[in-house]
Image 1 (cartoon, helix red, strand yellow):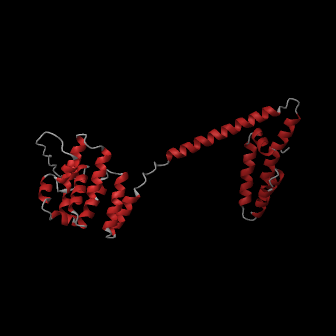
Image 2 (tube, rainbow, N blue to C red; image 1 turned 180 degrees about the horizontal axis):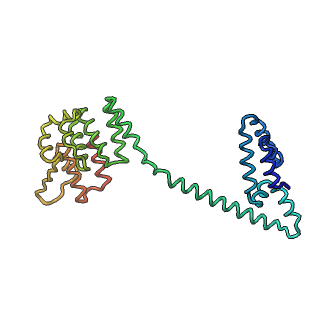
Image 3 (spheres, rainbow, N blue to C red; image 1 turned 60 degrees about the vertical axis):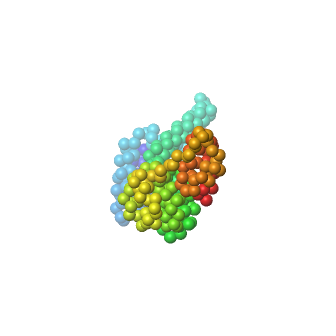
Length: 269
């Protein structure tokens, strides 16, 4: 067995050449100390090792440098219990696992929350809009609305794209929707270049006076009865009025939500 006092004395007087490391069986460290000869570093390291050995607890020294001898002695004892040692090792393993789990859990908590994944169709629509591909931008924005139907920016971008494509009815519709969902930058509506075509339309002044909202026309029903769906749509030539009629029919229960979406898609298509 190695003695900590002997190791300390060797480190104090011969630590500059790593003799104490060879004594402890650490051949690699001993060679490293030899390589540092002439630099003065090995002398300083020897002094540090000497102090560490002298103040080290004997049990800690034995656990570090006499572990093999301790294991042999323990096995030679008449009261040696292999099962007890296995149980002790399992307890150490479980403690290590719990420690690793707590460390991993704390690191996960310290990480910032994941950002929401952007809508790819919205991003591609913006890029196509910048590249002057307005038809492609409209197609991507419409697909984006399938997953984010209440996105104010998408509706406003659609209004701009439809205006550039000279489709005022659809531009009015999406601009109305953007304002309904909270769009408040009215100065942008008045001065945005993409909405220039929309601003010269006959109905824009009324649209502006109404707070940039479309007005719904009540359906005529002199007999107090609800007319059939085809009659209502045919009697209303304006596309926006037809959409408003569909909304009224849905509120009265004449149309289901699926039928309303289908009819609106047909009108906008």
